[in-house]
Length: 125
Image (tube, rainbow, N blue to C red; front, side, top):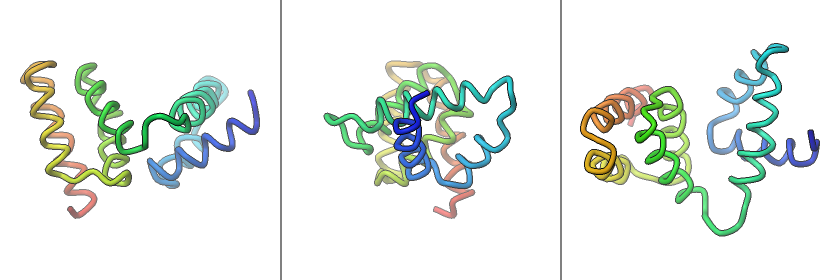
């Protein structure tokens, strides 16, 4: 593990997903899944999210589309929160999910809408 990349990734991960969520994920890691948390933090959150070329808002859009396509509601929940943090509006998220209905299928989009509504309710928006 590269400690510098890990630290930069951890900073970005906390800024996008929220310190409470990230600290809980890392704090509850055990010997089995700690290497995955380290990998995600170093490679995804520093190696990808900190690359030039796309801003965080755009990366959130891309991530949500992929997560809908892969039908990953748990991860989508996290990234809807991140998308709000990164400046997307509910209306923009709705449009992303409407587009996924065409390209990923209506059932996947329905799950995405359901997940986002729960997140919006939890966030009071």
